[in-house]
Amino acid sequence: MESSIECVSSTDGMDDEEISHPNPFSQFSSSTKSSHNNINTNNPTTSVHELLECPVCTNSMYPPIHQCHNGHTLCSTCKVRVHNRCPTCRQELGDIRCLALEKVAESLELPCKYCSLGCPEIFPYYSKLKHEAACNFRPYSCPYAGSECSVVGDIPYLVAHLRDDHKVDMHSGCTFNHRYVKSNPRDVENATWMLTVFHCFGQYFCLHFEAFQLGMAPVYMAFLRFMGDEMDARNYSYSLEVGGNGRKLIWEGTPRSVRDSHRKVRDSHDGLIIQRNMALFFSGGDRKELKLRVTGRIWKEQQNPDGGACIPNFCS
Image (cartoon, rainbow, N blue to C red; front, side, top):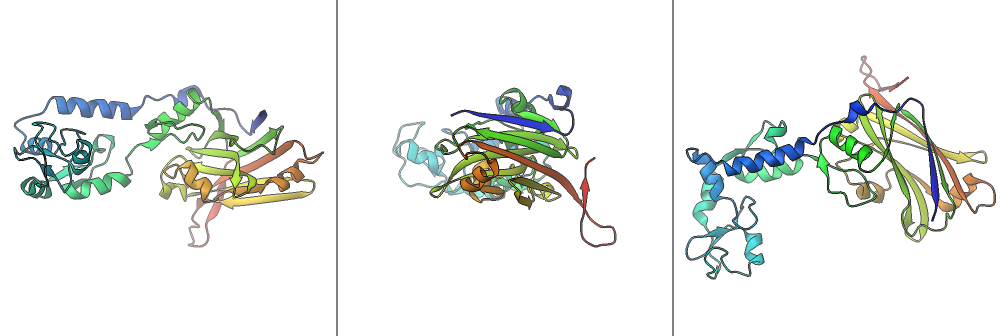
């Protein structure tokens, strides 16, 4: 299966210096580890927090907290993993709960684990986990959809990672013009796709284009994701256009945040979807080769100072 892609940007590419950043999250991990290795025994909160750390998985324990007859504790998940045997003394665990430790945990207030990344919040022990799952300071996952990439980091680090490790095309400007050519358009067994990163309005956007099976029908889909949180993504809009032979399809929408996985966005059909027959019609010729030109624009919505409708702000 052969395909070729031509990407044309309206402006020059981004400077290397602009997206060269170390990963602050690897520093966060190492600093967290070192803090555990140098525990201040004079700090009662640290000591209690140490007691609440499961000796098997080292994660914080939440009810039900189990203990053996000798008082050794572990979390409910690891109780199953160790086949009901205490990992410390090898005694049978039974179904004894450590109610005293659960009660102590209930009285604690702890900072978010992303405090070193900027989160100022402090939560009761049992509320902390729920907050951290949705904390705005939590790291982003790599938006590259071509492999199961496990890299996490802030946006500048992920942009550099996409460029250097995934060799993704980088462009500046809010307009784009892509030509997608595929020699065998009937073969979509393996999704063929491309990812391009755009830098405009001081933000980064990921443009996806791919082929996949929608039910029994092969389709092509293009959509945009915003490299940031959902609230900020709502400040922007984009349009996609594809056509040929005097016909065209146009899609307008709001980019989805990269907090939403690539698969989630794709499976919700939130983008420009082109049926294969329509794609071949746009391609012209003998309909044996796919030749699609996808153009688009990103703009920022600006609130009318008079309180009226939003005014689109197009970059020059």
